[in-house]
Image (cartoon, rainbow, N blue to C red; front, top):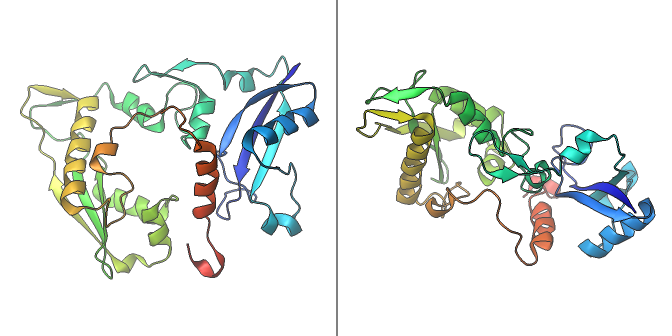
Length: 270
């Protein structure tokens, strides 16, 4: 039997290269005698037929693309995707292939997420007393749609003007950023609603600071109900959820359905 590496990508009109999004919706490996058998096993597992090549003229009728390759004995990079790693910051165990599945491509092989990679870079920095972060004070901010009154609550330790820029010019595929893409920057207001004062302790680590900022962010999300009526996708109780949850029943089908629901429809509607 031979091991085959596969990934199932969804169609994405905003993909940086080609027509298919990355990270894939699903990725993993399967054992089979040959590539054809591997494809058949995957189609049985996922309950649908996948093309492995889609011509431009057939894009409209194909939502997903399956890629399969044999894992060679000397293909150390692909084999490492499945090896259990220990995060260099939070010490949790993870595999890179799991990160593909939860759409978390950051952190490489060293960290379980881009957030842990960022925190590791800052872990040697400490905040003493009520001194602010070394570059700018941490803040909680609110971005509001002037027309609808709907808002997004966020936190940042960067200069807040930079965070404002990032939201509008480095937009991701979230509920908030979909709304941004359909409007002009002048249709929004940005305001700092809290300059965070640190707890009265002799010192606080970068990790503790981040946890405290998350707590303050959750407070404002609850106060403004921005996860219910606004653009936040996580409520206060969900912000500190586990990164890797065990797969629930029908999770595969929900992932396919979610990908379809997030794709633009004709006429620019979502």
